[in-house]
Image 1 (cartoon, helix red, strand yellow):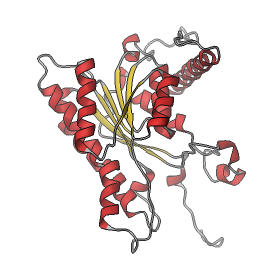
Image 2 (cartoon, one colour):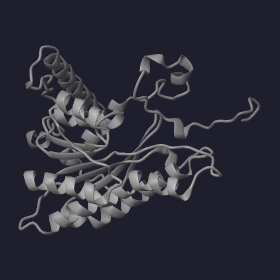
Image 3 (cartoon, one colour):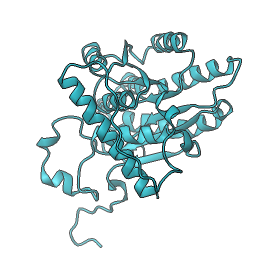
Image 4 (cartoon, helix red, strand yellow):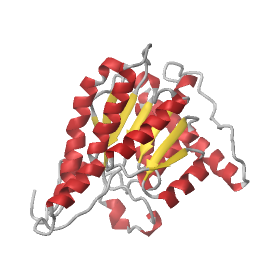
Length: 299
């Protein structure tokens, strides 16, 4: 049952994506999602129509994984807004998807809160937040200043708390409860494994991992589930330039794509999936389960 469900979700996603691209090609601004016929033998796991009408806010949505998440939620028929510091890429993504773009430096607490307040004022609530924004800056620990370390945390980690806190405050002050809520935090497999010079990045992702399960308990009062996704190697550009060895080292026999993360976001936001809560889901093609030795004599 589960395998067939995932296959149908993949088919639906690919069909919507193909229709969306075709609409772009012919200059259409709106499109009707194309869905493959449902099998009559499976009725209990079919998504409810209301699942595709959510209000979604995504941080760092202009490029890479964030852009794929914006595209996926737009294709699913949701109302989407995103923020990013890159105005050029942000405007391009907004134009291509129909999502609302806000230029924001998320390390600026006031700017991020102002952005969310603007969206809340227009939408009355936010159903889904995807905290995706992040930077990776590796440097020798002897060359990394305390200010450099703090900057990474101010972009990668602190906004997760800011957006979650603001949504909680908003929900607390509502006269009637919203029965639905999702927060998804983009973590990294580097929360549990590292390389030299990655202290700031590893600390920020480790913080997201821990903050996720803390928030899951704190926000349950307002019907909000909180989960994180830990991507492995996700190639955001020039995928066709990868070498065979890049793919073959993965147990899944390929390097990841941004769409792999976007599909998991959609899955976690399914109405029936609220029993998944406080979890970190690794999507890395099996690499963190692979035992690796340098010596060929090791067993």
